[in-house]
Every structure is written in structure tokens, then in C-alpha cells.
Image (cartoon, rainbow, N blue to C red; front, side):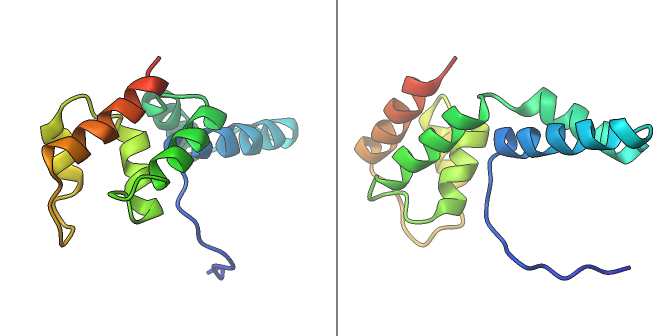
Length: 116
């Protein structure tokens, strides 16, 4: 029953919601959704803060900043959409470098452009 992972990529909650909505629509045509599927979909709908296309744009723009070296960090930033510097610092807590206040503000300025 185990399945092999063919490809791995970090995606935002918004993108996961888009994928899950499509899967749920296909499954609803054949049968009722399983409890786990309904529960996952509810979670994604609750926590997705942007439309999927805007979330992708935000991740791309964050990746262009020198202080966002990995897609993993850009996705976390897009999912959480931090409002204050301390929230950004928490996301970077496991990284081997610290951000200057100017770098943090630059990240927050990019995120603010996408805030709904």
C-alpha cells in the first residue's frame, strides 16, 4: 500500500488548497468524500490566506531577495504572512545566519504588498 515519492516540491497552503479542491471535485463525482479528505480540505480553506496564483507570485518575489535563500523559507513566509519582525525572526530561528532589521523590513514590505 506504500507509494513511491516520484517528485517533491514545497508548495504553499493556498496551492495545496487548489490541488485538494480539484481532487475533492473529482472524488465527489464518484462517491462521498472520506472524513480525512473533508478534514484536510476544511483545514486548508481555514488557513489559506491568499489565492494560489498570488501565493506563487509572493514566493517568487521573496526568492528574489538575497536574505531568502531557500524556497522552503519563502513558502513558510507566504503561508504565515508575518506582520511584525519577531514573527520573521521565528521563521529564521533554525538558519545559520541572522537578519538585520533592514532585511526583515524588506521581507515585511514584500509581504505587505500581497496582504488582502
